[in-house]
Length: 103
Picture (cartoon, one colour):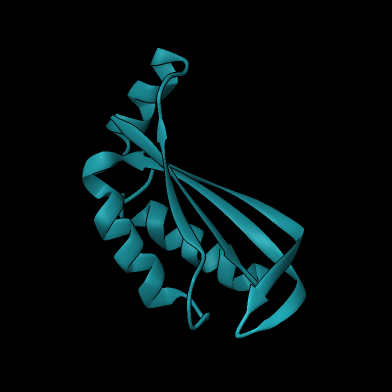
């Protein structure tokens, strides 16, 4: 099975660093970077509003735990937004690609 690891970060350079490391280490097959999103969230009792980057990484289930650990080690946030979503379907050839490109 395969999964999407969704995360946000505040700096495009950090987003690219995380993406490149995850792909180079074959933890994920691909990372999409959406360079600018606006996030509204509650943090420590206050409503915050910040510009962030969105990263969407595709990987196999066996790599999810290592991927989360690696992101956390590189991330600048006190509490990184890291969410895993199962992929329940898709183009078989692409899903095979995800499996073949991860260690």
